[in-house]
Figure (cartoon, helix red, strand yellow):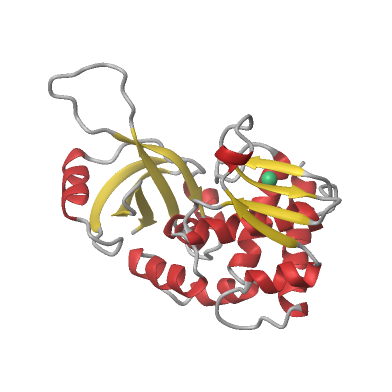
Amino acid sequence: MEFSTEKLDFECRELAEFLIHETGQQEGKLDVDNILQYLGLTSLQFSFDRELPIEKNTRALLSYPDKIIAVEENLKPERKRFSFLHEVGHYVLPNHQSSYLCDDKGLSAFSHLTHEKEANEFAAELLFMGNQFLLQINSLPINAKTVKKLADQYYASFESTARRLAEKNSRPCMFIRFNRNQTAQIELSGEDIWSAQYSIPSSIFKQKYGREFKGIVPCGIVNQLIRSSQDITDSIVTQEFVNTVSGRSEMSFEYFYNQYNILAFLIPK
Ligand SMILES: [Zn+2]
């Protein structure tokens, strides 16, 4: 299992580097149309709800024999780019290479389906220009300001940029996404609870402290962030003691808000 994951990583990276090189893209952000053209793929955009009402939550598809990729027209531009590249992944990755219909969950960071995870990893490799991103991040601070700068540079969403900044970092750090708890009950003075939905550690953080964060955003921070955050760089930094696999450690939390979710970086002191 471990071996095949490493092998897959290699294939994703190699294939992405190959396409970046072959299409003459060396600096700045990736030109998606250039990749589609090189592979002879036709791109379409339409409303899946209107055209394919039976398939719920479909966001993108690849019709392999027709060499057509279609993406939901109502997505934000950054998500459209990612979705096109995800379908390119299904087109080029070994053992994929057939037709796919991909929904919101498959295109999310927490999909458990092997082919969806592989296509997502490939899309991220391309979107962040392979080695270019990896060489760049280790000299930059791990914080919301860096996320904004890199998201602008690569024309990617704040969440996917923050996730990759942590995951590929050579320093110990973790990215966490918090979701607002949905309650079916009616409460007179319900607290606004945001709990960790998923977390992505760098490999050294995973070895030293553990792979998953469990917890909620402190109430005072939720109120302050939601009320006053105009921009993801309006972040809040706190120092906390947390329990980890190697004991109690002091860590710095930086919370920021992308208007959908509360996001955070966790960095050991
Ligand atoms: Zn897919």
